[in-house]
Image 1 (cartoon, helix red, strand yellow):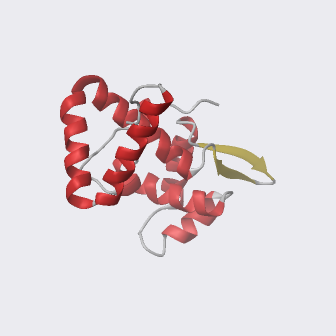
Image 2 (cartoon, one colour):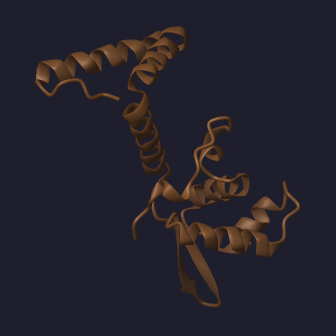
Length: 147
């Protein structure tokens, strides 16, 4: 099973998982990653406390996540059990890698400049970490490839 981010759209104006998932997809994935294995009924019961949703809507979205290879489903008695094909941290790493690769490929100078400016203004410790990583790469003779 291969996960491709080509099925996801990056929405920089959204927050968290909603940057790459639709709102309901993000809510479902939070539940699935937390629980590891779920049935549609489990997710529906969890979500209906906050949202007015039909059971079939939740089932449709979960099956779309299966089509995108983000979830897998296996028969278990009269129902299906859904589980993630990738952990949340692996997914996050994959998204960050894909987004940064795309930015660096076409907009390296402004992307790097923005990252450094943002780190300088928001978190000097992370800027120091970036400097440390660059120095480590230089001493290892691999060149600078931290971003």
